[in-house]
Length: 269
Image (cartoon, rainbow, N blue to C red; front, side):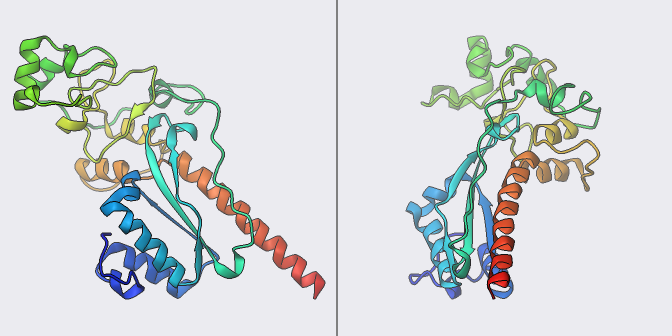
């Protein structure tokens, strides 16, 4: 969704994905609705995009709570992933309490995703996965666990980075190998993009489909459809399951309060 029109009304957003979301809210009039997107939405087009969303939901009769950026690693997800959560409550129910999930004190690392432990009771099962071209694999072999392109010999830095070697900025996602002892960096829709490399901690290869799913906290019996590329994309686009669960619990708490409120109203009547 991009900022469109000047009045920020419902009709101004036709042709965008958010229009379909708003259309569903308009037709169904749910007690509460939740939206999710990348953190960058907060500053997209100088904040006008998210303000347009708020204005449309308000036009539809909803009170929009202050959007929250939730860090998945605080919700039993072994990944440094951030998601923007928008919650809107129908105006007649806005007096009822809604609480965003409280963070856990324990942070899980990549080893908790791929090895037997508290999150999973078995090691990650074998599955297909992408492979590196031969020369890239030879270069990545030099990168230590937790390291990136600056850990390469200078000649290999120049070969791998090419013109980027002479530009500013850390570019810490390039030639990046993950560490067992830290949460994984945010997974993208492809496991071996040059700007956002996510190499296995020990083996010189991208994560497999099943490893990708584990890092997103999908159970091992969850099936993904389509080609390998499509499966990576499905997993990379998903909200981590454990984070989704915590948001779901917050929704249940709100709906319980609604049910109790209705029961109290019925008794009073």
